Length: 425
Ligand code: PLP
Image 1 (cartoon, rainbow, N blue to C red):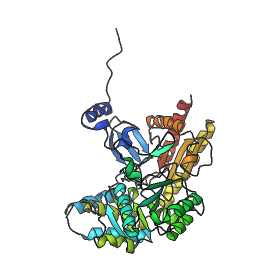
Image 2 (cartoon, helix red, strand yellow; image 1 turned 45 degrees about the vertical axis):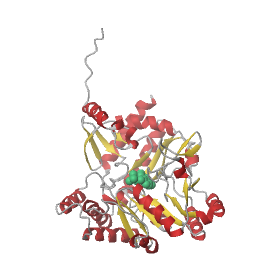
Image 3 (tube, rainbow, N blue to C red; image 1 turned 180 degrees about the vertical axis):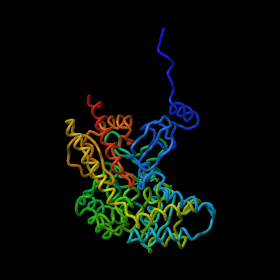
Image 4 (cartoon, helix red, strand yellow; image 1 turned 30 degrees about the vertical axis):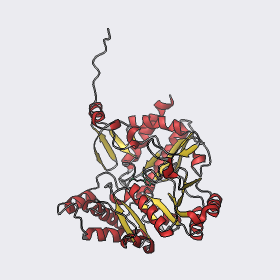
């Protein structure tokens, strides 16, 4: 007879059982199928609290949006206050004008903006606009860059070949994409030489945060800018992660290269669901004339524009960038030190606002060279980190927020050390 006592289910177990009955996989985004299955009760600042009483120092930030920390009071208050007078009007309102002005002023080079709910939609609007403006069909894009989950942009690599990433996704929706390795100006020049008169747009993350947090090589973005102009293609920077995170000007500002269009999301609205497409007036105005359709019931809602207005005001009036850089740099250095003390080839690279943790040693400049690292090994460490109270995923990207301070740094490094000790043993 088995004399072990009854297994007590945690509250997370109970909730997961209920979730699985009504929700495929128990989650509402496939990205969350992997990762911790703990249920979160609440979040404050840089901390998450589970329904079972575990606390976590959060370096995932809801996949990036909580750049100012969780539930920043001034932003939540601004949204609640604004929404008391109505949430969605089906008409224009002053807050959306203010939010548009603030974003364009912060970005610097952008004349006009259209808000959407998600980065995925902003990318679709950008691609449609580029095709309309050029009368061409093809899009040049890059290995490892993520541009949303829809059929014409979702790609993954299987058995060394890039293609559709989902059952039900038709391969023909990817036929107008030309996929290149990133950070290789000669390959881009060759592709444009071959297909130049068919290419509507060149789209990239100006820093490839989605895969490895890899910075552009010196001169690469400048070359992409020059080549896109030379061949009459629209240069789109997908700044859904980098926007407002690397500074008010995002990747374009950091690297001093101006695209024709850029997409924003995540850090733009203090955790609220907002994204945007910004760009040059001569392109963007095609939406205004009605020539190019861009729609959305919830675009520029009171919630969205109040959140953007409060976030941008806060980023301009009380810039958190130095604080974040200080924490991120100290954290990266601390992780490296702990890795060295345990004699494991821990690799920490990227920027203090967003960095990548993995194992191995290689010169990484693109998705292919990233594969030389032992990414699978980090995935197993990530599970152990979550068990020890550091909220990260197996993808290796860590985000730092304005709410991370000395207490979070010390706690994270102590927990990391403990997790690594047990994991190595
Ligand atoms: N573009 C980039 C660079 C992203 O990282 C993401 C999401 O992570 C998207 C687009 C899609 O944004 P969303 O998930 O808001 O649809």
